[in-house]
Image (tube, rainbow, N blue to C red):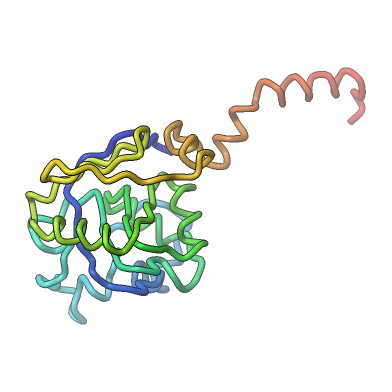
Length: 201
């Protein structure tokens, strides 16, 4: 998993509440177990019409937001089923930070395990960030996880807080497998001692 330290990029506004995981990545795209290739299907039913043509009114289809790295969304983002494909599709599109007043718990946890930083902030702060994100290509934010700060385009700084363990994992690029591999020297020492003590096992 890639480290998350400082992210600078355009923030896309998605002023919708209760965006569920089926809206993020519809069920027909859940057949793959690969984490790549899902970005093109992110928000599929909102991004494309029935003929497969792009909907020019949807935010991520607008030229200013096609390379957005941050998403500012409404409350209860990521509700619905627990599909891990939801954060996979967000990450594959290129978004590494989602800011919202609240998240569904499973989606929130899955974000951290896949290198995405979900930031919970009070509604009034999210409203301010949403308004700033509506400035198109000028809506460039910097998210500094080490300092736990968001630097807005106008120079204002917004503080946020993250669970210390999850913050450590993101800063060091550690998913569940990575956390286990950090302990590899101890595991190897144990296995060698066990093999010497019980060679028949």
